[in-house]
Structures are given as structure tokens and as C-alpha cells.
Image (cartoon, rainbow, N blue to C red; front, side, top):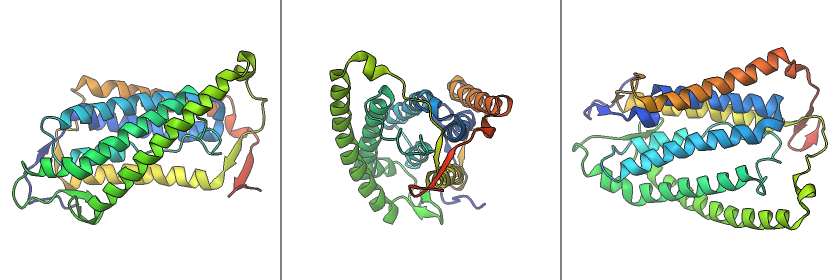
Length: 273
């Protein structure tokens, strides 16, 4: 693959998107997909762990952006925030009365707010220190960061911020309604039922994982970002180990406990097959 020869090589930040961090996140995405498919009762636990790692990465790039950051690094991090869906039924995606739902709403509000700052102001500030004539690539097809993709980023960030703020309000109402109920009723576990899988969500989740991995690795390579292939940075070990352990754990249970043999209900666009 041809790199961006008009720019000097970029020294990346391994603690934020080094090889260990990326492998850890990719493993978490696959593990989350397997959990949503074979063991949906564990979705909330996996979601909280994943959100914790993502939040630390977002905080890292936000703090670094206050000093000196190459214009392509935030784009790489923003794509790293994509991954597999947290549910294959849609029920737990909108489960706003639980801790994970509130945490998710706050995270996406912060992510959208950072996106708004980056696309409206950060790009201009970061390109001022960039070599003249250097083209920062932001998407497939050598799409530049200052072209139509920036306009798209502005629109998506603003819409995402508005939706996230509304979601926080929805979470507050859902939490209030939950605490108005009796504690035993609010904390009662739902009746066990056969796992449900929406095929459209399954295909979307798998496609999102493949797309996110491809675009992140493409941007790193085409923008000639180096210094990311070593595990010398301690900050890479935590997401790496968590991702590998999550994937190993769910893979072991699928094989040993025979989760792949469990009967489940299959749906296509809401219609039971």
C-alpha cells in the first residue's frame, strides 16, 4: 500500500492506539459479538468493561490534543470507538435504566463533544503545524481530512451530540421511574427465556467490526504513522490483556459449556423465522 510520501513520518502515541491497544480492542469487539450471540445475559458486564477502556482512550487523546497532536491521530481514535453492537436484539441497546446505559450515554456525549471541537476547530489548529503540501488522509480512497469528509464529520458530530444529550435526559427519567418502584421489583431478574438474535443486527455488528479494523489499519499505514509496533509502553498492556482474556473466556465457555448448542429464536427485521 502506498503511503503519504508528501508528509514526514508521524510518530504515533502507543499508549492510545499502539499495537497492544488495537489488538485488545479488536479482541473485545469479537468477544462482545460472541457474547451477544451465545451468552446475552453477560452483555451488561462486557459493555461496562469495554466502555471503561474506550473512555480511557478518549481521555488520552483529549488531553494530548490540548498540546501537540497530528491531525490524523484523532481520526484514528474516533474510528477505534466503533466496534461491535452491544446487543443483537435491540432490547439492551436501549436499556437506559441501568448503570451501563447511563455510562454509555455519558460516554457518547463526551465523544460527540470532542468530535464537534475537532471538526470545527481542532483540524484548523492542528494543520497549522503541519508541513506545507502535506495531505492528511482521513478515509479510504486517500480522502483528505479537509475535504467533504470534514463536512460529514461536522454533521455527524453535531447530530450525535444532540442525540446523546437527549439520551441522558431519557436515562434520568428511566432511572427515576425505576427507583420509584419497590426495590425487589426493580432488581428482580427477568424470567429465563430462549436467547433471541436479530440477523440484521448480527450482520451489521460483524460488518462494523471488519470496517473499523480495516479503516484504522489503513489510516495508520497510509499516513505513515510509526512507533506503534512495540509493547514497550505499559499503557498498552491493560487493554491488550483485557481483550485477550475476554475473548478467551467467552470462547472457552462456548466450547466447553456447549453454548453453541443452545436453542435460540432467530428474527429478521423483527419477524420470527
